[in-house]
Image 1 (tube, rainbow, N blue to C red):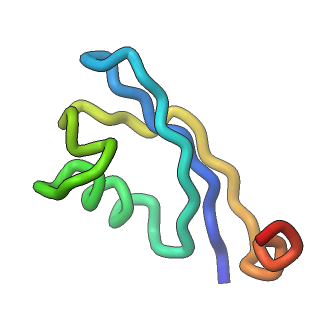
Image 2 (cartoon, rainbow, N blue to C red):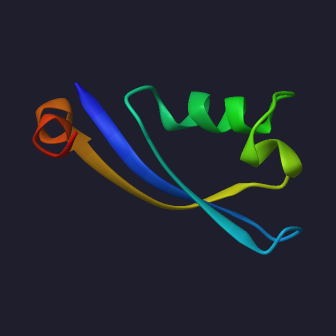
Length: 63
């Protein structure tokens, strides 16, 4: 199973957000842009600026 490390950027906040997920990046970004509480709820202009794909077993080594 593929997992991803990703970086989002908000121009409005001039901030970066680092995350990882084992779901599709499109779905994860959709969740960041939806109505929710948390750091990324502060802005709706998050853009994916970087991504790296990993296999799930690689996360077991660091997590």
